Image (tube, rainbow, N blue to C red; front, side):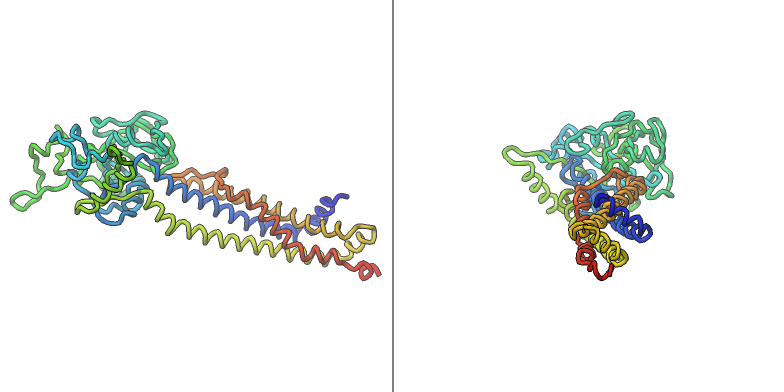
Length: 438
């Protein structure tokens, strides 16, 4: 019989003990795999917001991290709104009623306004214009694609585009109508918007967004900024310089939550230097603040995500080590039970090295078996919680999600099992034949 066959026979003779040992190892591995994969998914969720076609966000004074979380990931609450006049500073003459470039237009490649505050069945509603999907990118320079329909037009006041996750979760299709609620899911119901496009999956927070035409958003009850009148009351006032068009909200009653900026490179200067100069100019003023999404995301990862991931990984590593100790205890007990069998093997001519190898192979089989089961359990767990992760993080997660760190897991387990089996292996190696057969 081969060494592998002898080791497998020894495991089968102690099915219950061997099974418990393999199970403890499997649970430890499952915890490690699930931690590594979910940690990678969390990082992907945050890093996915770093390449959406803009390199700066402008919003109200306050926490830059909160501004990024709200504008990029659609979590947290908006700080405050900023005026339309502030947004107009980034627009070229062709997009301004006075036909003059804004003071920051030369430093701006693309400026996309977003308005927030409404919800639709648990999903954030974002008021914006067609530029969002026409000129920004879904990441790495790739243009937005639509799985159904197309982008809305600015003239279609009550049109909407929804993310793939929203469409899947709520079973929505093109031409369906949705009625957002003001401030919360149980808030006042607004006028309905018609879905004209469903975005292809991006694996970014965009998948969780409901994007409506900003012009229609402004016309909803409670969205217009009150204007102080001369008699002390707050009434909407329309003047020639604030006229936005027939049936549209005047400019002086408009506010935006944030502006997504793609900065331009000034002649002779790199784009990064232009961005830094524009950021400093905005932050020195009193109307708004500018935040760099990539920098804020890195701070978030360094302060919260990475330490938490390391802590969980430390805990799961300790679980695996405890499982290895279980292998040690099991093998020690096994070696004591099999001392007579080992003595018989030696008496029949088996060399000490054969006995040593048999014990080590038995430990490796337990480690590989338990590790394989644990790997399947770990990925199965991720597959089960995948829909929840996709809904809340906007990142696809399933059984086949993986991290490259997993490649080191099986070799680590084998080394750990060999180390745990060395003591009983040496004990079997040094078994006194005369004592057990005398």
